[in-house]
Image 1 (tube, chains in turn red, orange):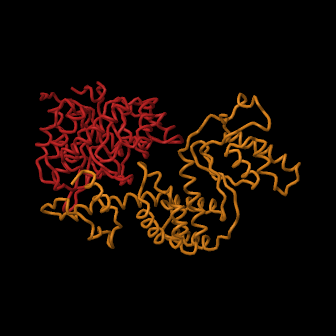
Image 2 (cartoon, rainbow over the protein chains, first blue to last red; image 1 turned 180 degrees about the horizontal axis):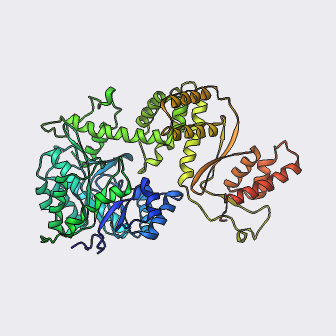
Image 3 (cartoon, each protein chain N blue to C red; image 1 turned 90 degrees about the vertical axis):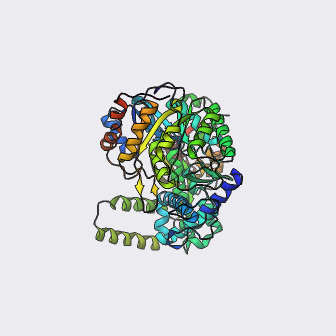
Length: 282
Length: 284
């Protein structure tokens, strides 16, 4: 199951997000890691240290690109400069697939630099799917879209979030980067059953899975990527693996980042679920 | 409401400056957001508005430590909020957030207090630093590019070499700010307070000094190199694409230095530029 057309028919295992505080350790100690996920935008530059460091990583590791500013869900067209730079990076890293978020973040040429929630409407699904297709056609690499954590819902919505996700990926014929922590966070913020969400995800479209920690506030949960993964999220992950099969999985840790070994150990907790015999549902 | 209309309304609302206590402006329209049993529509929007402002202010804060030192933390915070309100990000990358700060401050000088010239110089230096950090590194000029030696030879400059003319020695100041920031993790509070006070006094008394600077990159580190006025002008002329002969005429004709001395200097300059890999072939 892990290899499918949305992840370039690869069978990547447990990956770790490549973060600046760990670079020296990784380059010196060369830890055994299945693959690293990079934030594309950090390397969409013309030169200097970021690209030189990336090239050193690429000499030893497989890299998958994860973006944060494609904004498939923005009503305005894709940014061509962004796309051109992204394509140059795709050629450099030879990433088997590219991911970005099912969200919006810019309008009228103004950028919020945030992953803003979509209104779950048919119009939005249509626009988003068209942009995913355009991007894939330009980049010539499979694309998977990630479900985001959200803190707001819109009166305009005509369907649930998972129905919207399905509507987009079917129309775009693209993959899913299934973030089980984001499902958990949104389920708590919007009072839905996260298993309803997971059970509706088409297993054959899941290219990759994200796991992460979050922060709990009095009235909502925030997706902060600054804690270990909590047990309820591991349980969701276990359920996802049971449905989807062993899938390339990445731990995100972006703030208050501990040592590389600690992050890697946390990510490797996923191995026991991946290694367990599973009855894959179709 | 169409997708575009909804996104325009929400973006405009969350980009409204935060009210005291970092609360969202109570007048921000949020009627398109559903409330839940814990949060009103406005409170839900506030989560995004705070996130927007914290993220962008943090980015400017990190990119302009020298400007913070020149203005002080409170004045810098006022300037940053006003700048982002007037000039929201127009790029997909936050790296470009400060690209319009110099132009904006020239139009809004009150935000610099009595230190406009110093603040503008520091902004120009810090923006050049950002550009030099990740600019392209092109193939350096080699012997094969010098087959047509003579006054018609055109030479270019590495994109990471940024030339700026300044009224204040902000290069030294920026280095001191960096040093102070690096010490922050190790020194005691009392020592830090004393040193911060010293830096503030130094900024207050900083005398004007006309300097010519190249902000450039060497082995992935950004450096500031002071240049002679003639050297600066010659580099600028070459960078504009003038043939070597014309560039030298334009740069050196008003120099008070004797011709022989100028000739020796030009040799030294070219040797230094070549050693640092600043010169690149320019396509005709």
